[in-house]
Amino acid sequence: MSQPLVGIIMGSESDLKIMQEASEILQQLGVEFELTVVSAHRTPQRMMDYAVGAKERGIKVIVAGAGGAAHLPGMVAAITTLPVIGVPIKSSNSIDGWDSVLSILQMPGGVPVATVALNGAKNAGILAAQIIGTHSKPVADKLVEMKKQMREKVENSVREIRIAGYNNEFDS
Ligand code: RP5
Image (cartoon, rainbow, N blue to C red; front, side, top):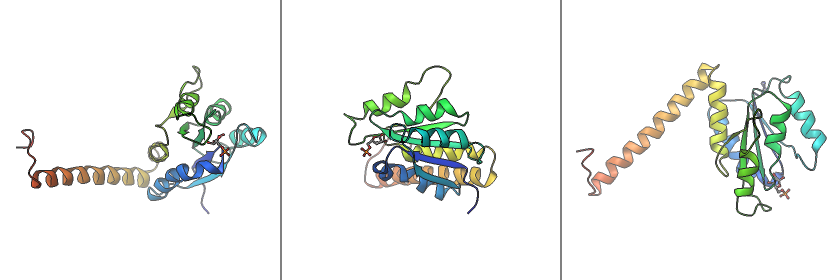
């Protein structure tokens, strides 16, 4: 197995159904990653060991997902100087998702966590790939191709909507 560059961690196995979206997009973009469960509350020593050792093991970015009282991304960011992308998860113990969002988003000055949308693991994976892409041409090229495909999809929908009989002044 080659060296993982992105470390995907989550507070519980129950987060996996969301967090696997980060792994899927990283796979598509050709970025090596590792994925495991690290709980800030239930395995604090494991969290400490993971965050302390990640940089030395060659990890460049950490994507951390958690729900409810979601302390994992912030605590990992407190320990490491690696960039940490936080994924708030609408978990079973989350009231309505806001608790997860605010626990990850409202970090104190000096300890940033790049927080994506609620359940936004796919975007977290893309952002991690964009960071890796600053130093990897193959990954940067895949990101350019992904943007091209997104643009073409929208352009197709513009054409289909016109064919369906809807018009607009902008395109005419
Ligand atoms: C958080 O509590 C985890 O990240 C998860 O989102 C949530 C619920 O965990 P389980 O009770 O399902 O293990 O720490």
